[in-house]
Length: 184
Image: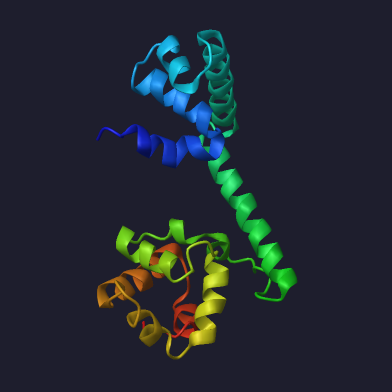
């Protein structure tokens, strides 16, 4: 699927570059304009256009270097983010500290569920939580957890059963699933 320059601007370049830098990058690399043509549209010379293009290219290259290079680095960053979120929630008094059970430090993205179920959880505000935090949220809703979830748009019985199965496959004990208000 070919992305339009507007998609590129909206999704990637706008947060990283200012409007003129992003426009110059798009005109040069996507629309294949010359530096002189781009300079005319911005009322600057071709040399200044080249300097702005070089600066924007450096910004993009530096931002790419910040991304994790291996899957192991990505997992390490995700684990650090989960621990930080858990500590923040603990100090706010929202959740208990995670216990020693391995499933508690996992996140929604680690559940073996389809995209529709995952998006349903995200739309309800549960997407960024660890399973431990989700466990405590659902315990507050118990015994009406299933009713609460089923009232939500695009979250039906199939999504509910898939969520329960995802909990089971991740190693959440049946007792904990029942404590969340689900019928196992």
